[in-house]
Structures are given as C-alpha cells and as structure tokens.
Length: 146
Length: 126
Image 1 (tube, each protein chain N blue to C red):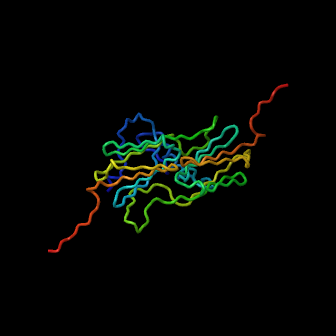
Image 2: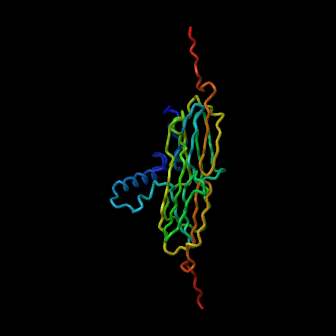
Image 3: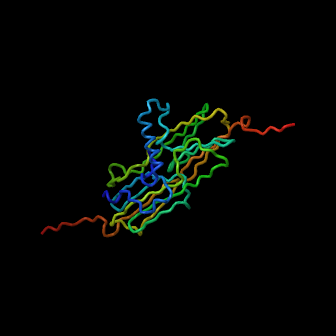
C-alpha cells in the first residue's frame, strides 16, 4: 500500500483501504495478475468515447528506460527504479524507507475495440500517460435520417 | 532519532480536504538529512513546502491534463492531493533547506546546524 490516507483526516478512504486489505486477505481467487492495488506504478484508468486513457504514476523513472508494450490487447508497462537508499558501506542511516525500488511490471487487459496502431505515450511530472484510440468503426455515431 | 522522523500530528483544521500520504525515504548522514518524496502528477508550481517553527509540511496538488468526457474505470490514486508533515529536530538548520523537484520526486536536503556537526575530540595525553 504505497499511497495511504491518514486515519482521522479521511475516514472514508481509510475505510476503503481497510476494506481492500480485508478483501485481499480473504480473497481466495484473486486476479491471475495479482491484487489490483498497492503495486508500482499505481494505475488510474479511464475511458472516453474515442480513447482509453491509462495513467501510470511512476515518479523518478527515466522515460527512456520505461518499456511499454502492447500485444494482443494486453498492455505491459515495465522498467526499473533505482534505490535512493545509501549503500551498506557508507556512514548513513535510512530512517524511513517507503519508496519503491527495483524492477516493476504491470499488465493491463484492454478492451477489444482498441486500435493498436494509434497509441500515444507521454511522461510528465512522474506520470506516464498512455492514450490508446478506439477503432473508429465502434465509436458511437449519430445516424442521419433520410 | 525517532522523534526527528515521526509523522507529526496534523495541526490544520480537520475540515481541510483529504489528501494522500506520499511515500518517503529519509536518510541521515553526518552532514544532515535527505528526504525523498514521491509526488507523481504534481507540477512544480503546485508543490508547496512550508516550515513553520519545527514542522515541515509537504503539499502538492495533482495537475494531470484530462481529456474531455473521461470516465474513470479504475483508480488507485483516488484523491487529487498529497500532504505530509514532519517534525524537525533542533539540530537541523531549517534556514538552509534546499529542494529539487524532478519527474515527480521531491528531494529535500536539510543540513545540520554548525554546532551540531560531528567533530572529533582530540584526547590529550598528559
């Protein structure tokens, strides 16, 4: 759980977190790709009539080192984030160690109507934004009455 | 050393909007403390750092450009704001804090005050 809310300040989101943890601990058959929350990078996914928008919250990762692949309707975001923690031999102490480090990989199944050739990926302020267009044939259309 | 890094009790009114707690790394070496905080999606102009007496507050607002008509289908970052406070200890020099913010990672360097820097004490042999 990387982005957590403090208890007294936001009761509802804290309940949400507890509920998630509870669900994970009793969920006997989670998704084949693991639990949906608490991974790195955190993902927000949205849809418009024309596109699917994926926001991967991956701060401090060099954009060139992120590997984004789209294959058979499955989107994979992979890469590596270096640790900021001091090496063992240096005379420094890590008091808090909460940030993710190491290799990461997240996989998203996309809907069937996406156009695999119209994908746009941008990295800004630590967020990777992937925009995938839907096929024009399946977009809602107004039909003129003759 | 625990007191330095403990998350302080929030002193702001509870009515203020809810915020996410960004994950941090806090590393201390002989010259001071380095704090790294993950604030993805926050543009530089929406990040604010406050030092009030001995309380350091980091606050940031998300500034993602959202396309028109977007409907969220899955959200792991569920609030548009980050906030976290720390209580600084006395040996840190709050006037000399330097900060950099790059690709959503805030790096704060808080040096120790001159008088608190470690020094070697020579033992004179009589």
